[in-house]
Length: 288
Image (cartoon, rainbow, N blue to C red):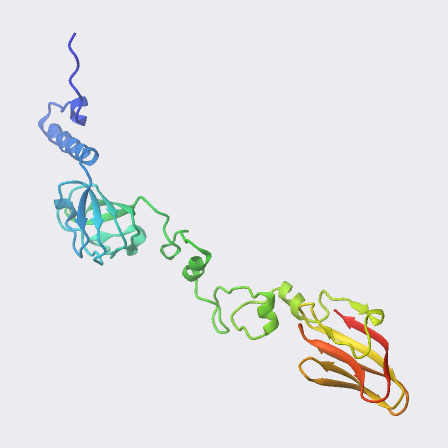
């Protein structure tokens, strides 16, 4: 019993038919299939015009970054596989070079496209259709690809301004408190960190506060300080801030009580005193 011959081509497994016309068609089909699967990938340098159909293989690696590519030549056969070694732009042309999605393409390293000849209504081959086989299309081309949030932010839409809609970045508490950023958006959480009374409580602190003693607002947000004082002589109550500002409260002509209240910024120091006589603390409350 003799061994079967080795199968080296598709046509070895599926013999050509006897009809001459069919035989010619099958022969061309087998040739195309054999060439695509058996021939090695060849390098073709990037240029404005690439005659891809005239190469010795239907698997081509496009090297270099010369571009944009505006034509794939007029030698029509295929399909032809194109693998790109680097970044190059392919310019869409609705008649002779149709890109995926009807828009020009900028490739990345190892992007793969398939090129098919385009036939006109009369049957004449007059261009190429490209189909993407690799890589998620970027947002700018209607896809979902974006390496980072920043890339997505840039690709989706313009930044919002006071005169244009768009995408806006959220402000941090520090940015909201600074009150100088006109581009970022304030959230309810930011309001809680900047607006007096939101998320704060009134606290009676007379037991832990002393006359003419420096304290620091370390809450990270503004607080409201209200102090009641007394003195042995006529006086004015005052609150001295670390910035050197002296806030004066109520005045009294003789011995007795007075009061002073002020908003103390985050990080500011403050102390309560009177400007005459011997003073003491009567009451001390803070909204913090």
